[in-house]
Image 1 (spheres, rainbow, N blue to C red):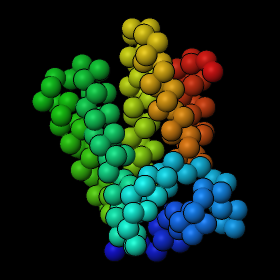
Image 2 (spheres, helix red, strand yellow):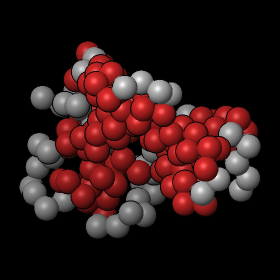
Image 3 (cartoon, rainbow, N blue to C red):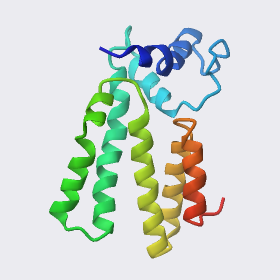
Amino acid sequence: MVPSHSIEYLSIATDQWLQTRSLYAPRDAFWFNPGNNELVGLWVVAPFSGDFLIGLINLPGAILLSLGSIELARQVGLGRVYAFLAGLAAASTHVIFRQLTDAENDIAVAGLFLVSINYAIRHARSGAPGDLLLGATAIGLLAGIKYYGQRVDRILVRECNWKY
């Protein structure tokens, strides 16, 4: 069962988009807030008559969180087994399991944060422009998921000396 918080706030944008048949839905009080994860939710539930698959919107974020943890552990010098244990530990907490069944978007924020940190480290070590591009893409997606993601982006850009 999806908690009432998810129904009342997080999937309401998806419901509004379905009702208006457009992403422009100014009748909703929060229509102007970032909604990348809600777009994933729209993609998941639009083909069906109900929103029973809305919990699947956190699956890509959980995958990013786990793989980002593995890569970060690998980059700081942990061995292969310990890196995989770090990914397992990051993805198997109570909070992650609870949010995998609802439509909250904190898992995606954490996953994209780890991805952007990983690409910042890779870019600092190699200077490859592809790492910078992928890190900037992760930061952009992070900013579009939740309102506090924009503050996290400013910190990342400032601390990693990335230029816009």
